[in-house]
Image (spheres, rainbow, N blue to C red):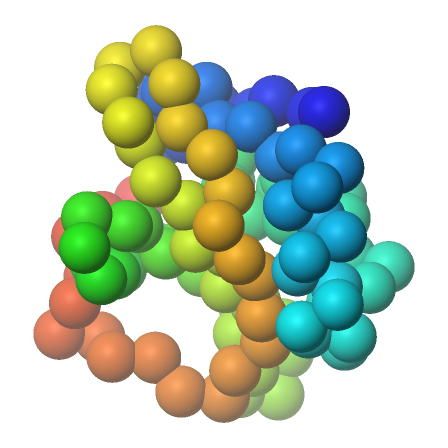
Length: 98
């Protein structure tokens, strides 16, 4: 298990079980473990997700984005839910940018 801190300084966990689930459902993310951690810790922007989740976004070149969905349970705990590549983001849902 690895832990990084979100822009809100909340520790966010990425467990082996969750990583396995992510790459099983998004095989294009396999090999991007470090990118998941880096995206949570140093995003280009953060979007509001569903049911309280946040989506950390980093540019992935040529109009593509790498997105990591995570949840902050409180100020001392959070976890990664999923990660995926996309070519569209809803900029109306931006809740943070540097």
